[in-house]
Image (cartoon, rainbow, N blue to C red; front, side, top):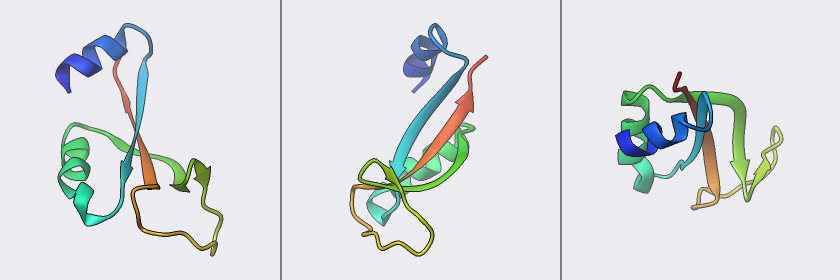
Length: 72
């Protein structure tokens, strides 16, 4: 992650990433938060589209929450 963030900082001031929400992604979720990533405020995404309020979605690998972190 240090290397990826260092390289990303050469191109942008903020980095974004998406992480799955089921328990299989638990370790990644915790790591990103510990590294200073915060939810970007866009809500849940499913299959590359924002989930609308009360819309059905499935807790599979396509359900993600995007995070961001300022690098500079």
